[in-house]
Length: 88
Image 1: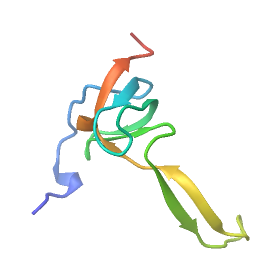
Image 2 (image 1 turned 60 degrees about the vertical axis):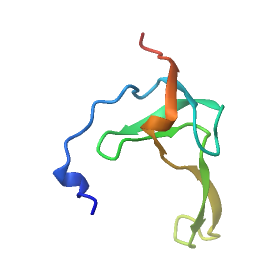
Image 3 (image 1 turned 90 degrees about the vertical axis):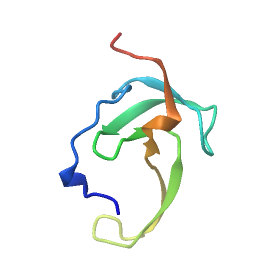
Image 4 (image 1 turned 180 degrees about the vertical axis):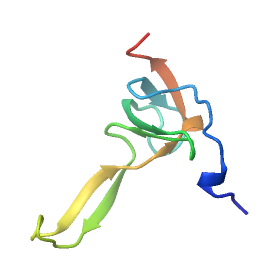
C-alpha cells in the first residue's frame, strides 16, 4: 500500500523549474519542453505544452459557458532527461 505524501520526505531530483528537458518514455517520447513546476513529494514535473489532458469545466459565475479545456498533466521525473538548464 502506498504511503501518504505527508509522511514522505521530499526527494532530491535531477531537474528543477526552468530546465529544458526531453521526454524519454511515454506518449510524448522525443518531445522537448521547459519545466513549469516540480513536485518533489510525488516526483512529478509539469512540462510546458506536453502531456495535455482534457478537463471538463462546469458553468460557474466566472465562466458561465463552461466548456472543455486542455491542461498539462504531470510526468514522472524518471521519464524526462535534462537537455540544458537556464541557470547554468
